[in-house]
Length: 350
Image 1 (cartoon, rainbow, N blue to C red):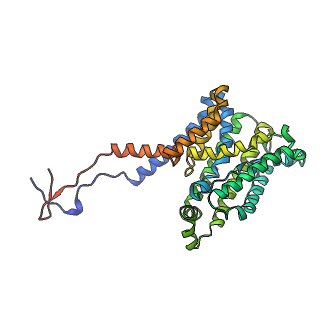
Image 2: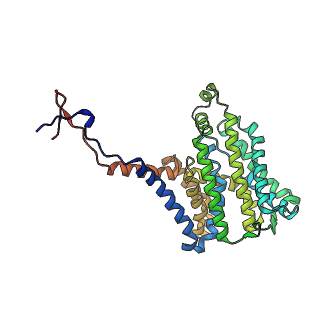
Image 3: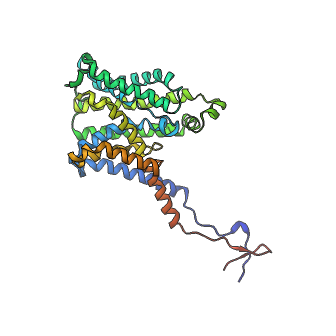
């Protein structure tokens, strides 16, 4: 049996309305936020671990535009963490600057330092830039041990005050967790907008082909300096909050191993999203909690996991999760076959 219909009224697969798609996209982040808010009531015994995860998430999230789009690996985050941590100790204990003001001033200082170093370093390409920032990490580790008048030497600096906003003191694990949750969301929003902005598109062009980008008039060093400064600001805030939380800061918190760990967090989780560094921070900081014996093997485990992820999941674990979800959706979506069209233009439905 044949029926003639206009081609414009041919049957198509129903598409969800734009409002439905927006609701679906907004529901998942909202659900994740609700879960994050309720976590302290569900696992109160793990709050110290989650605070540490939040600090390292803040230190690593700033690297996502630089690594994920510009393709530049920076190992210099510990320099800016040291500026934030040791600077917080000096400003609050010796100069009696309010803690919140000190954290902001040190973040601004770190951004300026990043722009200064970036003026020279960011002209380098590929692994040359990584080696240059590795030099910053090595110098930071040496200075934090040798500059005893500022850092306290190998013993570190103790007695740093807790973060305070007016009369409110951020002292408990739960209070620090909620503060880091707010700052982490802000950092994720800023870096995500940076990736989707003109600067992000320019960074992506530079990462894909720096020569072609230069021919189009894109100044690679200018845009990479912006991304480098953002990474410095978040790392400095992480260092200051680490010092305020523990009321202590030492060379062990900014050694070369930590510098590599931050980059590994980004690489394992995924450098092109705000969720990737969180997954990496949870793995790197959470796995040692399995036990002391396992903790001794942690560097080896982290290296093996990194090799596996980079070999089979180059977009990181979060990218692999998204690809898996998309594949499942594609398989579950019903397929519609196009109707046969007769020579006179009518559609034949079987």
